[in-house]
Amino acid sequence: MPRGPRTGLRTSVPIVSRRRCSKPSCNSPAVSTLTYVYADSTAVLGPLATYAEPHCYDLCQMHSERLTAPRGWEIVRITPDPDALKPSSDDLEALANAVREAARPRYEPGAPLPTEVPTGAVEVARRGHLRVLATVPEPDEPDDLFLDFDD
Image (spheres, rainbow, N blue to C red):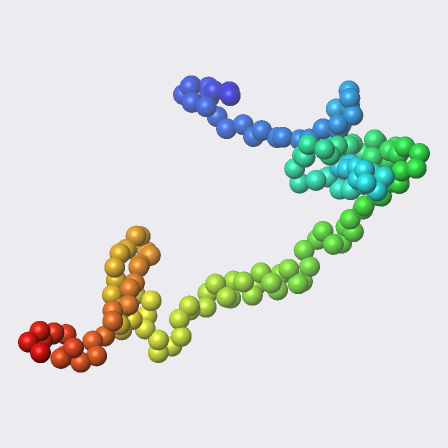
């Protein structure tokens, strides 16, 4: 990594990791991914996969357009709708609803606050903001607490 001029500290250099075409001696950037479905004798050519997989082949624009399949095989070309890739009003509305839900109080009015221990419970342990609560059995009668062995 390059070092700064006077300080000797490392400078941040962005590393761009681009996937290249899988064809030998082709250094063009990959734009699509080829997958074979051997059971159906089908080659599927679609948009570039999110990450490289072992049995898939990334192809550049030229090799994607020139792709041919063996005799008896079918090529399925999947082209995404460009409008489907853009954010829609549904996406924006879902984001706004998620923000509203996160801002909403998580307890009902009149209910004990989250910091209060409910009646009939005792705090047993605490780790950070988490608490372990255990229920305490209520005694039925004061006489039941003492056993009389004289009878």
